[in-house]
Image (cartoon, rainbow, N blue to C red; front, side, top):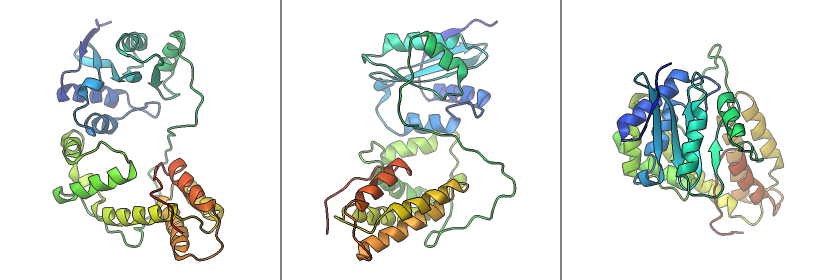
Length: 288
């Protein structure tokens, strides 16, 4: 077996080497793909000192890497053909981290990494599921339907500022900026012609503003029915467009003051957006 060497991350060329490992071993049992790495490394500028990163190589290719987010969180990828390296990555992590409690993100299907974590004394953190993988065959796909008010076209350089503004509104507080997003777009494997959504950004910004207004209401029509209907659409092949239509309809009814008023409804709407759609919108002030 080829000898393994270890070295520190030296720049964007090493990210490409890390991506090569993700690409080589990717399957439904992988927690990261090449696009994840480009986004995560470049979405924030000036954080390199917070992200100690080390690569393990053998025969001219990366066979494992570890990426610490100080003070104590680790992302790692280990070639299943070299499972013994998982323990080495964890040992390096423990020497590098400064937190008293350490956390490692891993997919439950990454059995060789899970085994190493258990040998090293790590315990599963009891919490809600953060990420679920879903897949479907790319045959007999229905013809896509663009929701009313949306126009799709490839992204262009003039769209960047609007895209960043929408991201920062949804993920407030966000450290994504125009320069950091340009770095993401400059990284492999980003391709402008495959990035379809800019006309959608204006509609998305308007939608977020309406949802924010609904969240600020003191009462609104009961939300249970809308939540059940939206969840039903998501359960049918992730029909997100129809789910959003349901939420928009409830929101418009709430803002118009139609129907019975439930003081718990705005909070239920907020919880649904955060818990189901992953949109942590905040109240900006209550309105009658």
